[in-house]
Image (cartoon, rainbow, N blue to C red; front, top):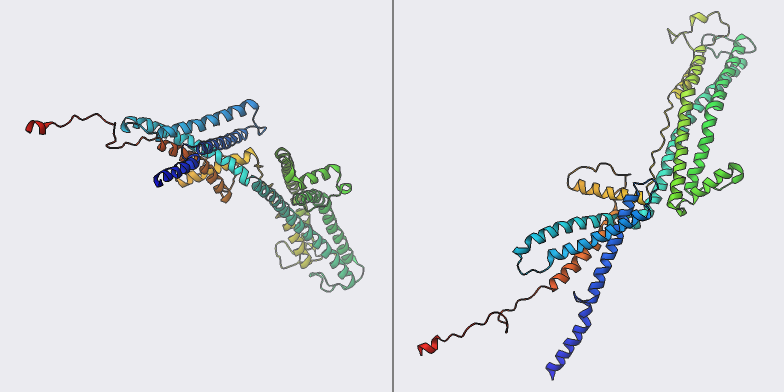
Length: 447
């Protein structure tokens, strides 16, 4: 009675666990699901890699169908090759060459699957975050470029204005108190040749400052303000005022402000236009610098010489201008004018920011080459040649690689488990097996 009940429970338990067995339906469903997921990830990663090499950034229907079919073939071939590696055979040594060839092809197909699958999982896990990082990088690069130009131009403009203001102040002091010229320490206040010369000199210095502002600083400032608004819009910090900036510019600012919600193609267009405008700004700033820097610096240096010392003896007044009643050796003003001229000459060219929009297939391709770089570095083979962009291989990339490996490891585990379950078990001494052995009748003869 007890033995019959035990067998009943055993049969019942086996019926419950049969779906979970290596040959059960759940095992087959899970293996199929892993294969489908691996095929999808491999196909999308392969499609992105191919699409990144096209101008449109996408493949046609025929190329996409070919990529999908090839990916499905690779996954199926990988499973078949693995099955031949682990499938039971009557004689291991006779089939060793079959296992060796199958193992080589399995490894090739597995590397293909893991590599392109990594691109798919990276795009899903880190694609949006990388896009936001690009927003920040573009804003920072353009802001840095404009800040350098603004700082240099602002310093030069300030130096020129200070020199012109100082010339006007020194003329006013001469008219009011006298004794502002080192070569005429006893000059008296009031109207006279020296005072009139000082005011005329101040007007010429102010004329240089006005020209610098009108022909150099103002044109750059207009473009700089426009680029500043765009950077602020990209950061979501600008209130849109269409009446002040024009309809087209307001539309551009709105697209920058909502860049994260745009399609990949629209973002590429907006970022590309913004970068082109940044390059144009740098080109305009550099062109104006080449046109005006030395010219205005020369005018300031000429003014400095008019109130400067003897060129041959810096510590003495110019003897050639002893009879010039308007000659005033002003050490302070001369130094200020020389400083302003030096500021104009020291303005560095504006470097346009480097920019490469990596999103969608291009980002997937860049992540793929980043993985190749990591593998080559680990093997001591150096950095990969070519590639696209520079994506840091961080935690999200490791997680994407892990996800791609898990899918293929799931296929490996289930295939091996099902193959091992099919291995025949030899039972020694089992009845009805082996060749019959004749009875030993020697004891009869001996008897």
